[in-house]
Length: 244
Image 1 (spheres, one colour):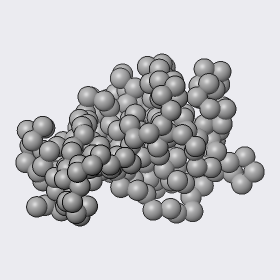
Image 2 (cartoon, helix red, strand yellow):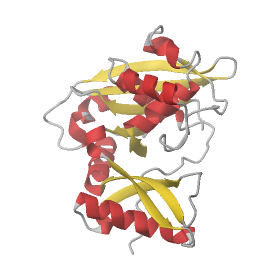
Image 3 (cartoon, rainbow, N blue to C red):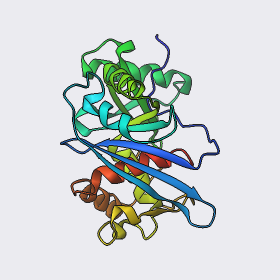
C-alpha cells in the first residue's frame, strides 16, 4: 500500500502573527489574511479578490493575482477544495480491525469511487464517536491527488508555499465556530470586521463537520456558504488553522 496521502494534516502549531487562506468563489478566488493581536485576538487584516487569468497554467487561474499581493517571500497559504472536487462517505469496518489498518481501507474505498489507483487519491477520515456493536463507522473524504498537485504548483509558482488543503465546508465551519458573535453575526457584520476567538468551540467538530455538532448552526453555515460572504468565510477558516 502506498504511503498515506492525507490532505487534512493537522498543521503543527507555530508562533505566527499572520496567516492566509484562499478559496474559490466561482468566478475567481477570495484571499483572506488574518492577524493575531494579543489584546484583540484574531481579526481580518486583508481581503483580496483574485480574478481568473487564463495565462496561469496551474492553480485554476490564481497565480498572477496571488503573486501581486505584497507579502514577504514564500508566505504560507492554505487552499480550500470546492464541493465538486471532493467526495465523501461513511465506511463500516469490523470493530476488531486495528485502527492502523483504517487508512488503507479508506484509501481503497476513495480510489474505487473516484475510479483511480490508490496512490492517485488524497483522503482523510475520522471515526464516528459512537460505536455500534460489531462495527466501527468511519467518515471520510477524498479527492484526486492531481488536483492537490495543481494547487501546490500554482501556489509555488506565485512565490508562496502551500500550507494545507481541505474541503471548503470544513474550513467554513471552523470559521463559524470561532467567529465572535457566532453564526448570527454572518448576517450583521461585514467580512472586514470579523474577529475570531481561539477558545475551543462547544459545538461543531473542528475536523470533520458531520461528526456531532449542532444542526441549527450547521444549517446557518450552509446558508452562509451560498452568500457572497461564503468564500471569505472559507478562506478565514483556512487561515485559522495556523493557530488551532
